[in-house]
Image (tube, rainbow, N blue to C red):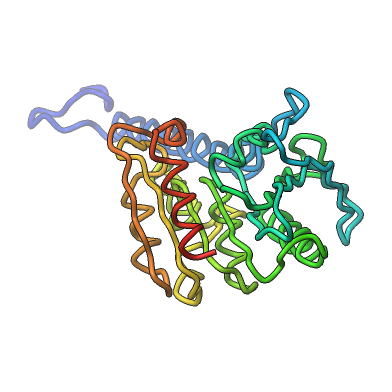
Length: 290
């Protein structure tokens, strides 16, 4: 009698061999599903570490020549201490620029370049939670709430013209700036390498994961953009591989107010600010609108 696990004359597997093949297939499939689920769970648990990269204060911040630098501290509604600097130019009641940095940026490090980038305007540089000397842990909700609290406090100062406020957000900070501009009266908005949403960027990078379900910090700028009427300047590096220019242009197309667009050819996500026209473009835009 022919053993049951040998091939029958027409080439088909015998019943026992077929059962083993099916069992092996489902074992491999189960292992793949388990590994996939484990990776998805790990991403869900560790997403703050993937999105936020807190940096310490590397050196004491310095003001441009002739400017005054004030240490700035603010205790939030939940008791978190935020820290940064306020830069004041030699001008009576200057307009204000509030800057929101990228996900791996300690913002007070750029204090000495305030005059080059913004002209004679007061500049607010406050680190996100967990960054620099700020306490707490970063999240979308916390960063936006903190930005609103801090801005509301600073515009009340008698030595600042709180009716002339500009916001500048870079990369992750664009998501904060857009949400602030959506609920506060600002004169204009500058966005460097902005995304349509952090969720859409993550979907491009991790296309094989269900990021729409996993992501707790979507920073959905494009959904808020139509309601913002303030003029916007959008700055993009043609070689940006992290936040691709198409992301920025989606946001520009959705913006509810006038938009100026500038592409810096040959520059990418992390070096756009070294282009010789970067600061001049921002300063000229602010002079026209804020």
